[in-house]
Length: 384
Image 1: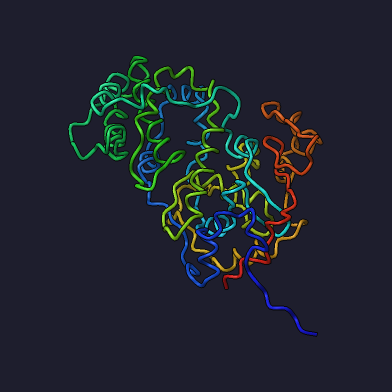
Image 2: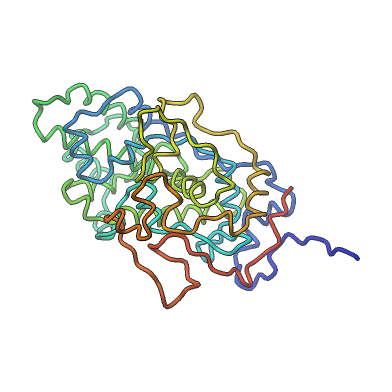
């Protein structure tokens, strides 16, 4: 019996209108077989945190703003082979990953459960007036809110972007002055600069690897109002936008909150889970946010980028079966509270919203729900 040759392409391009320029199309033609995507090194945030402990007053204020969990989790060792293999399966037409068992995507609940970033609240939007501000106006605003105005022209880029290195260097000077007796004004200035470093270096990076938008100053004016915004939705939207950009063409750089993508993949796809980092005998396993359990806990590791095998990651995704995927609100946890049927009861901060009328839809808040790929299905990545 003759076996028909494998045709590693989409069965139909009717819905995949961008397929001709998709990264996977180049891979199928024999290009990009060994090229992994990379983010330009953004070390300013973690270099600043590496040898410094934040003052308890700063920690308490950061807890109130909902961003302290990111700093608490710290840096994750990134596996760029895994991230590249996932991006090759990203469908910009549907904002989903195309898998042998259907489509899947990162949801708002994933953002909240994996990294503890709130997804309820006001949208993170920018007033039109700020879009029309000049460089001088942005620098005036920066000086008013942080007491910092760089004199070096190389610290600026365009009207609204600034070097993260310049901010880090100024923070290093301020850090020495943060004591229990210092007034709140200096604490607030320090926090705003630290959050700019977090936004530009971790949550909303760009391909330059070293710039942050000063437009974030609009939301940093009133620090008490930060928890009112849906930062999780903003981070997810930014991730979606840059997954689209990374999946098109032959570019090398990627800029997004890559740790979220990697932790999501490890929680969802059992075949992609490496051994969990060891914990001391007297330390209980962490529960929420789940990203904590994927970070090495014995100080900083020597290398922050894993050197894994791209063809192997492609093979695992090519041969993925339903039994190897966790589609519930969270992956299995060793925490007793997570064994209840209703995850919302185990963790009341997580609100659930089911779409009972459309069982084939990809849920926004209730874990990962698969839907049939139908006309989008293909026979594998076929790149090795």
